[in-house]
Length: 205
Image (tube, rainbow, N blue to C red; front, side, top):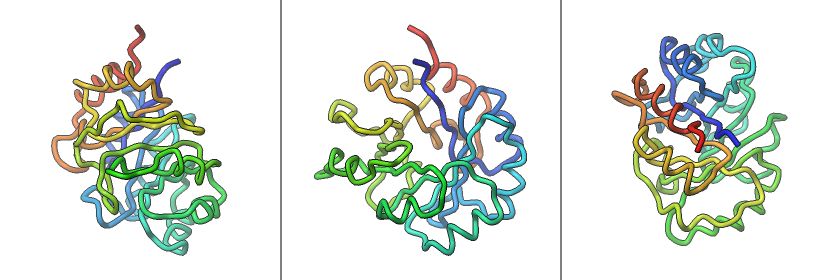
């Protein structure tokens, strides 16, 4: 199986085009103001225009109220939602789009229980961010402690062009999600790093 790749935290049109050209399966836009990679609806609407058919357009939210999420959706044609906060499954599913739920791989986290709670998620994203954090920390968590999940696994947290191939071999995730690992600065992607990351993630063994 070829591992899917999502490049998250895009803020520039040129970076969107470069990620698509490199072979990204999904492009992520961050809508939480807690993140240095946050874009507003107006900017995201323009960036989404650069995303061609068959590449997913993902919106990242964290503990925002339903009206805020709906407002973004009225302006930005997203195809997948990604929730990084304490949102319930009922909250995540109310918008009529497939969603991904992020799970912080911190001490005491019951990943299997979270997977059961979000049994209709399109995927469960395991990240190294602290509870209440927006991701993009550049930190790796212990991959050996990942249990069997009932939904497709999306691996995030500290992935880079240097370690993603090892991560794919060890974890065998459905997809990998990267942000800071392919940047020169928050929200400013490095084309060479994106190309290498995607090549390494999709390498056949």
